[in-house]
Length: 198
Image (cartoon, rainbow, N blue to C red; front, side, top):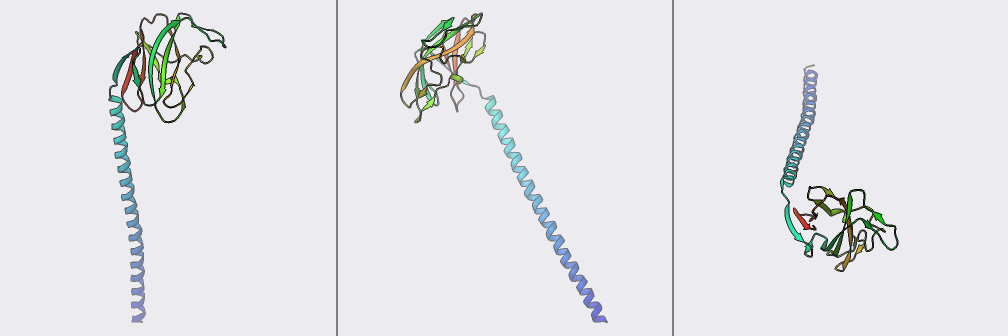
């Protein structure tokens, strides 16, 4: 009888030990998972702080203004260009399209530009990076109805590498703009090129 009681006691101890080991193992795994989770959250928090500091630095970085005149070359990330001439007009027209008349109290600024693709592959020119800024700090994007409404338009022309293309870029601005510049930023830098047009 004593042997049976001692076997039951030993068996009970063994079961308690096994259960204890299982509970300890599970608790240890949970603790390890907790440590891993914390390490991941800390890393993400540090990454987030680093990214926000980087973006704050980028926001705080002032542009470096590079002033240019008509006839001077400007090299950007993908193109090299030069403004040859600027004209103010009330009407733009082409041989094949209908004339476009400037809005009331507005005028067209027609810019004659030479452009060279300085990359190794062809692409279509888009003037959407160019803006005109007038003496009242008003900003104007390229005129949207250039294609087909002016001869030699540059918009959406395919630029082959290292071959110069000449064409026109048109802006519509208010008639009371006394002076204005053509502005474009160089991708990947904080350089802002400002070409005095008038």
